[in-house]
Length: 496
Image (tube, rainbow, N blue to C red; front, side):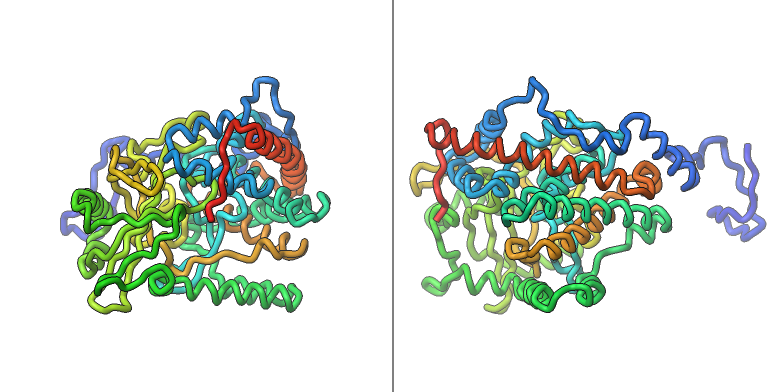
């Protein structure tokens, strides 16, 4: 037995309370190591994969056809939306990259890894970062897409992020030297910020966030006036992207009721008034969703009533999975709340990183987002409910699917990546690398990751080399998609 004093025992013995503790009762749930010991563990992981080894990318002979992997995903998606997905991916090599998370997941498993795991984003390309409102209504910058989130090696996220900068730079017709610089800036920022988090108390890491106003004031002095003006415009646009703004843009008043305006095939409205069974199924799905929220959020939802419901195609890689928008109306006509119900399928990382501990894929997404985001959407939850199958413009109910739920718009915005010049792209790389480091530091051991990365630029340059090599791979895969479309092997259609 262990005897101690002043241990806060529930008896009213004050500081003289004697508490007898059986051995092991207060043992920590993991090995108790000092930060320096965690750093040493990280440095030891270089024996598994040296930092310079991450520069390697050579497709192995057994690499599967990337189009076959995409077709495998298509088998579980809404048939009439799959051609829209291919149409969006065919727009450019970067658009293809956005939709090709599954082929890259296979490729990443064939690259060196330290084995240090975090709650990975799973699809950490540069457009999956952005601005949104924290509960205090201030804008923060963070990772904002978690469809593929799963515990996995931290390098997988870093490599996908760096490769996205190399691919995006080519799309802007920059030279590979400039793309490599942007990729290197992202990785360097990840490494240096991880070192900062490694020196912080964990609660300080957990509460930290990237405040948009503070970041822009810090970096504006180093940017040309045109770049500063664009960034401030992006921030203003984010402030204006609210449920009310979406309501005014997307809805009409029809016979005294607000209705979502259809725009086939991107927005297909359900004729709820003619299909009460759909409304009943929706009510059941929302009831399940409410149970995943805290009591205060459930109280907020109690103040809104059903307005309308529609299918809305979103993104690139997720096109073909079910996605709906739900219009809720408050007591006032100018008090809408838009919720998005987005189907959650198994993460593309699951065949390689292991199955999620959560059987419900929507819960997997929500739990991963809550773990890694500094200020997750307060209405983030999950449910199961309706799906659709379509023939022409006719929609019918089919098997229930798993969804996560979030606000459609809550001051969400992005930086103007398509018009960035090389210095701006590198600046944006620094911002994304910082956000990814902050996200990983919440679920991984920052000191262990920092110990592995070290203080030199060896890791930065290795990942930048990988990014250029993978941009070459992406170009080849993109051409395979165009060839498959030309041969009629896959069907691609524009969505407007």
